[in-house]
Image (cartoon, rainbow, N blue to C red; front, side, top):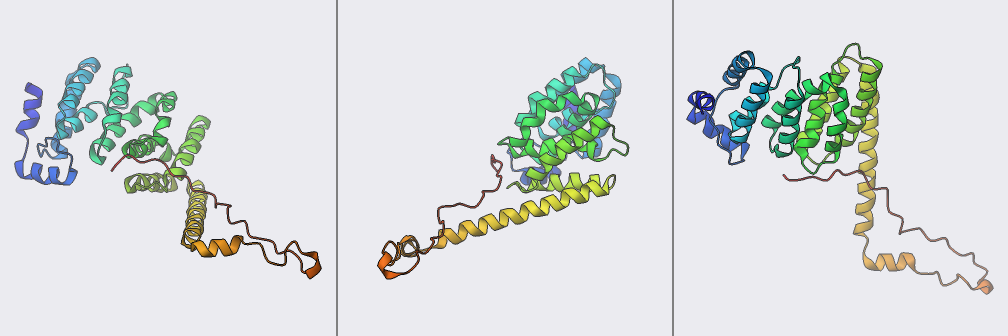
Length: 270
């Protein structure tokens, strides 16, 4: 394919070897610098109509070449794209295949433009908050980034912001570090535009972390108890049930009560 050959011609074998070792996905990597990827994508965005651009993006994505997938995402990064249903459908088709941060964040950059164009589309990606794929969990926060950066949000935007803040609170304690980083990045962006709301979220986050730490400590304490300690703790005192001893029955601790377990989002990999 001529267009893909143009991308290949920009490859650097040494850069490709380093990038492939870093990604650890076994995917063909050409070693094309991001600036050159963007230059090609910008040229094709300007030269092609929307249908042809989406078709080219799909061809590039299906090649499963690292830089080609990055180019596919860049082809769909445009604020004004009418109609954009084809681009949105492509993004939804590709999202479950994301297996790394660079491609994932690139695709979610394109997704964010399509979400701002039609916020009702958030309903389609809301389930990503509970996905087994951590890159989708991260992607949910990257794609909704524009709502953290709005200076004058409308009432609908504020509602969306609150929804994302709830997702971010849950994902801020995700087992995957890339997901946690995305949550904190979202809040840092929000702090530049609405510091009071960001501070309130941060306090909720700290309370959540403290509660989870307390629950883990309690669970560990119970797990460390020796079997004989449990037998002794559950034993009935000799004096209980014998009124002639004149001793009051001793209340036993409720050792069967488990501390509240923290929210844990299932993880895929990784």
